[in-house]
Amino acid sequence: MKITNRIRTQIFFLMPSLACAAVDTDYVMMCGQLAYPIDTAIAVDHMTLQAVEEGLGTCWIGAFDEGKVKKILGIPDEVRVVSLLPLGYPADVLRPKSRKPTAKLLAPN
Image (cartoon, rainbow, N blue to C red; front, top):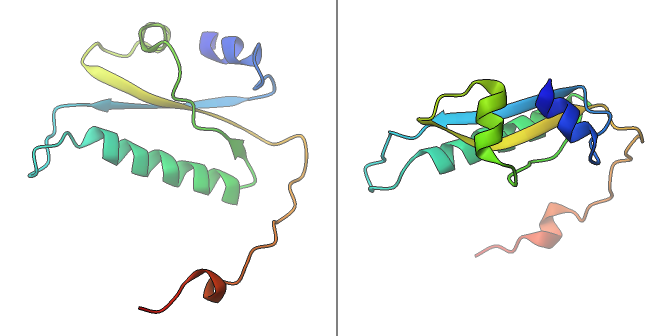
């Protein structure tokens, strides 16, 4: 509730919900890279796409004070908070954008 109240003082003032992407950072891929930045990016991207499909508005927030978020939400020190996603119904109805046909964007190799 504290985070929601803080965000409401910004541009997300009508946001009824907030999703927090928090992960364990231990897993390392075979190539030696940490898996959590990639895995979290994929998961959050899918969440934003599904939110739009459900008629919700959202925005990936990556600029926040991780320590404050952890304290407010009771997240352990060993877990990283990667992003926050405010979720709510947009005040304005968005019209579908006209797009170029795929054939005009792709060229056969």
